[in-house]
Image (spheres, rainbow, N blue to C red):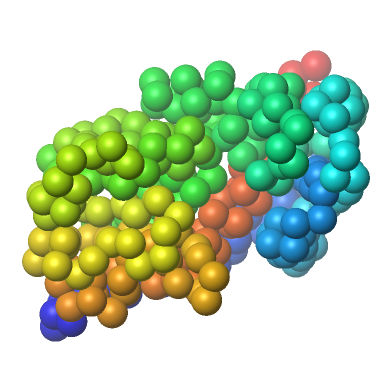
Length: 286
């Protein structure tokens, strides 16, 4: 661990985001509007159920209404989309979150695309992705947005830096690559077919790990002084980087837990309030 190493505490960043939401939520209450997030859980995956419960509790603590919809494991794509369409049409619902993964018989992409763009607070639709690519998305994917929020909070320079993102999922690796590119970083996106991965990672001033493999990124892959953001969460409360070894090289690093995770949830809450404010603004114009 270098003397300058900074632990990027996600709990601190999340608390700052939530604190700034309180006054906005009160302002909406004065207009008889309560921000509302509807969460859909299909099946009985215990990890997904835990995530949904955490998000519901986070909403409750801030005064955001949370609607939880539990659907059976055998739910079809058509039934799920019908549920989403009902939520799209409900004026009291400002945000819709489909907890993923969904059971294998469901076309997850079709379900995501059924979410109205103005309620896509988790940033999962293709339109939301495209808006993010152009730099004007109202609701970029929450984990990428959380990573950028951490960099912003700690005033870590991004412009002109070489960012290496390991992972290319449509709701994490790809959108965070685009967000960093829009902040004028030079971005390399790595994936399972990348050759000489370790050598590529060593070029990074900023490393984003998003592969879903415990302790995959090794300490000797990290350039001295690099900033490491671990977006992974695996069994045993470990991330995608070997934290202890990477800490020895990094100038700043997110822990797991208490790193990107809390900020992701806070970002979801922020997006829900943003969506509610847009509804309030339209009502005031009407």
